[in-house]
Image (cartoon, rainbow, N blue to C red; front, side, top):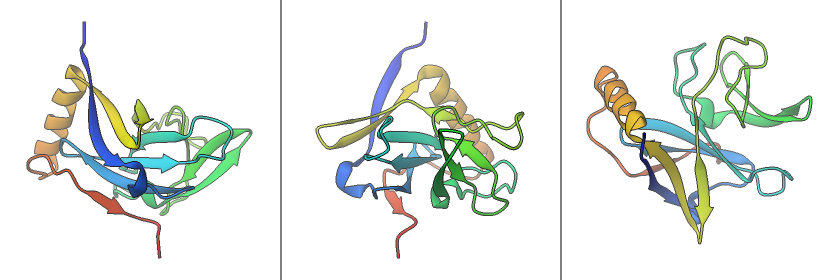
Length: 142
């Protein structure tokens, strides 16, 4: 049985309404999308890595809706990924990882299981990312 740990990744004031920010989670990049007026879940957390282009750019994507589903458009080749499950609309075999996320008393937390921690460590070793960095990179703001 896996154990879930909630890890603080940033604070509500770090989020940008209707846009993405990217946070580090034990060496992995996670894109957070804050949509308080969407009428759905307010906060989404998905992988920042775009499998089509190979770039870490999902957090810079534009938010929209396709057939009632909230999506983010990848900035380079414009694939649309559903925020609730990471599924690519145009390429059904592609999917971004989705992370459980919550906003409680101004604190943004992402859920990690033991299996997730092993996956993150393996990814970090393979991508030349060393150590856990707890900073927020603001993207999509001018």
